[in-house]
Image (cartoon, rainbow, N blue to C red; front, side, top):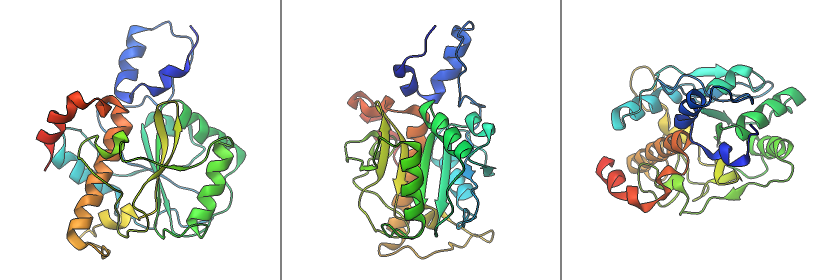
Length: 256
């Protein structure tokens, strides 16, 4: 059986079921992984600061567990961009606050396959300045992964802004941009790019103290950054499932 492009838009939660129904499917399926627990996977790259917010993933996972029915692991998993292990997870997070050297060709190829076959990558710029530092390197690497694509602002009608909470803009530790950017393949956005340091808004030290001031909106802005993070994860797990307004009452019921 030949794999068609429509398969790429199927949510991760459906892929395992499909493989059970179609045991003779001859094409290798990527990004399947353990469906029992969601894991926050962080990309470790060379020659840069790949982990500027070390206490980001575990805090977001606490909130995900508390607010939703998603079963998640608290511990963050670190994966190199060229590792085949990346395909075991539906979501990956890549952050930084400075320039880094180009990824090698194998890493670019691996990331491209991961995204084409169901993975979602959240890119989080801790500085938020166009064509400077981390952004400069990310723009270069995304163009290598998808030479014929460009990062484009995601409209407020995008499923990301209503996959769990109803949101009307992008948020983070800072408010450099009111929108997210993304790369979309078919009807699925595979790269989500935040310029507002989401990780800085989520980070809490082991003693329970927020690590970074959220400006200019303080606690309310931090809360909205958590809501956006949860929305992004729900989108990575379900795709455009909740684009249909028939699910709006369910979303409203689950809001905190």
